[in-house]
Length: 397
Ligand code: GLU
Image 1: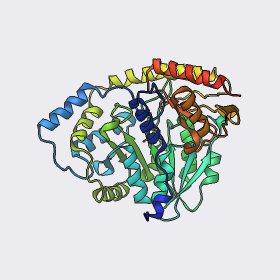
Image 2 (image 1 turned 90 degrees about the vertical axis):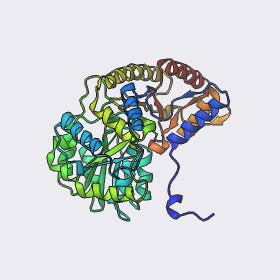
Image 3 (image 1 turned 60 degrees about the vertical axis):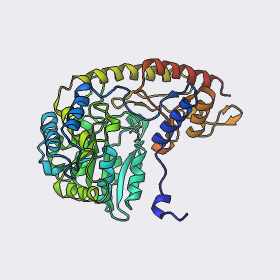
Image 4 (image 1 turned 90 degrees about the horizontal axis):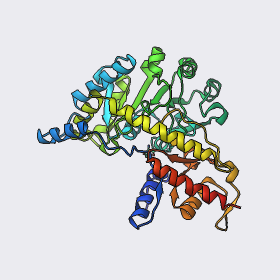
């Protein structure tokens, strides 16, 4: 079968592929521990579900404005005003089918063949492939563990060039959990001020932050960047609403209108009922977010401690999101179940076969010596999974 050249240049999402594989193994009756796709194990709260039921009863079952219903775009405007004092107009907001879709539309709208997008590595698996699908070129900048996996102003400056169309900032980061504080962001923004590129601020983990870390919006810190920054956000993580598929992009009206044009020719509006539920999520009582985050923090503390106690595993403490991303460099090259484990992929396969634990190997995150484990799963599963991984590591020779 002849397929397009574009499709040959990309791979399927590893996070989703492994999550599906885990479900398949469980369906076969295997007792598998799932550290794969990052999604809160909490249920969507009742107030949000009730809003959806009401919407359904009221007959919110038709097409909506492609960009999202007015009340939702206004709720998003209110959220940014409330959280960061940012002023947006509803024409500067586009609601899409999840943060992923918001990003996809955006890359399609802004990239021409050969345009470069700077992505600090480790990065979320889907950025490079979405950029390739748009004809753009991912320009990966390797961050260092000793810098907490944060791109430095010097590294950013060295990567910017006349072909740079955009820079992707993802704080807190998937997969490392690294987050940029006020000073970090101010320093990056001073570099970006001097270069005419777009800034894509993927803030989907803005509320999943720990200890006394404070999230800052780069636009609020440096309003001069407002006219070329697009903020990506989602309800999936903050409100445990992954399956509802509501995400949004906020930024300059011409870019938003261009992304909306793509949406109008592809998916049309996001689900009408989920949009009404999203208004409730954003404007209703926010207490449950704090409850969930406190629980994630307990789990983070446990998993990082357990991982660091394992032979050959080193894990930095994440400031946000819900992933541990340990280096397993010292384990690579060892032998397990008679095979040489030369890569993170080999090691992940070994953990699955030997311990029935599914982790995501680091290669597709641009980090060949790491593995990712989500701690958006119960403490009991975390302890059990760590026991098994620890026992498996002891068997390596
Ligand atoms: N963002 C989540 C993850 O990294 C969901 C899966 C995906 O879309 O990649 O696991």
